[in-house]
Image (cartoon, rainbow, N blue to C red; front, side, top):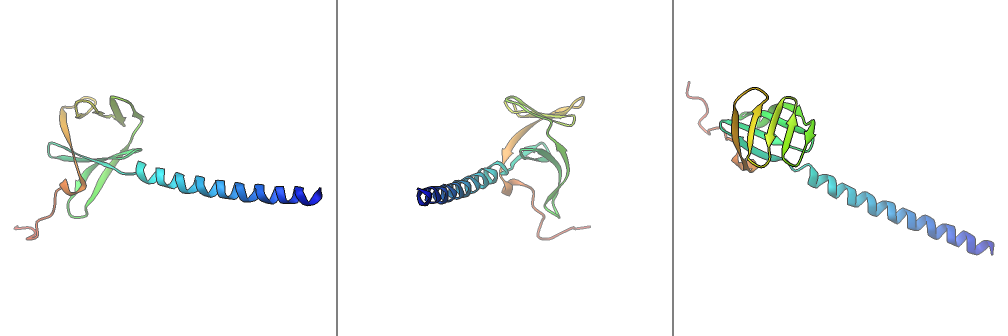
Length: 121
C-alpha cells in the first residue's frame, strides 16, 4: 500500500511540473503578441502606441521616440494618456484643449528615414 502512494505522489509531481512548464511557455507567447506596437502618422507627427504607453516626438537620427505618456484608460472607442486622447473609430488625436489631427496607421518602415546625403547646411 505504501509503495502505491509513493508512486502516486511521484506521478502527481511530474504532472504538476509538466503543467507548470506548459503554462509558462504559453504565457510568454501571449506577452510577445501584446508588445507589438502600432505606429501612427498624425500630420507631421509620428506616434507609437503600445499596451501601456503612447510614445511621441520621433527622432530620425536615433530612430527612437523621445517622449512618452502613460495610458490611463484604454477603452473601446477612446484611448486617454495624460491629457492626450485618441479616438479609435475616427482616428482623431489631440490634446485636451488643442486642435485635433487625423491619424493613419503605418508600419515601422513608414517612419521617416534620414537622407543618405546628410545635412546640406
